[in-house]
Length: 160
Image (cartoon, rainbow, N blue to C red; front, side, top):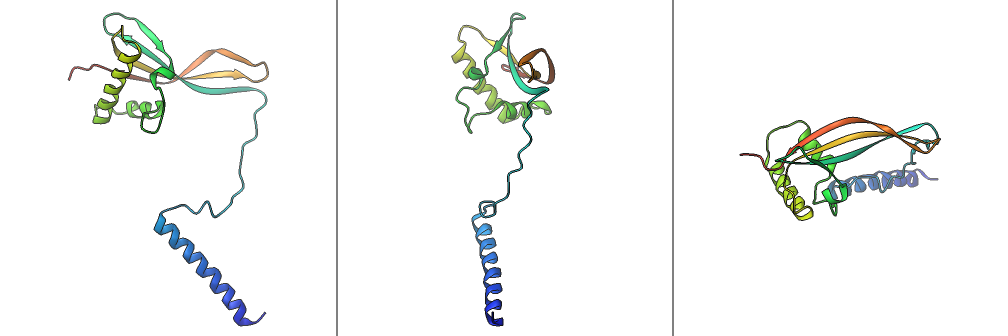
């Protein structure tokens, strides 16, 4: 190959890289669709004990000490990007006790949701428990013990 040909190839290569970087900057996209990396999947676990986390929701009425376990599909029906997920809810209520506008909006939405799904009872508080269960993969048994990971308390009708 001639020197001019090699120089042209190198120049075209660098020009293509600069064009690609310019397009990524202009459209604010990641380079990953252009670069292919191998998948690094983990080894499948076939034996032993598998731990998994699950949320449990309890509704508490104001007059009595009654509490009702509430199914997740009724607590957050039709989960979408515009509605909160339990992870987002738990994150909002975990650390900060201040009632932000987002918390007030969520509590209002939740009160309406509960009034629609359970119209005959009024609830004043919701407890969200994040618990860890253990499943034995060799015997296919769910252990009866569970470990409490996080506990979140939401007041629905707070006195302001």
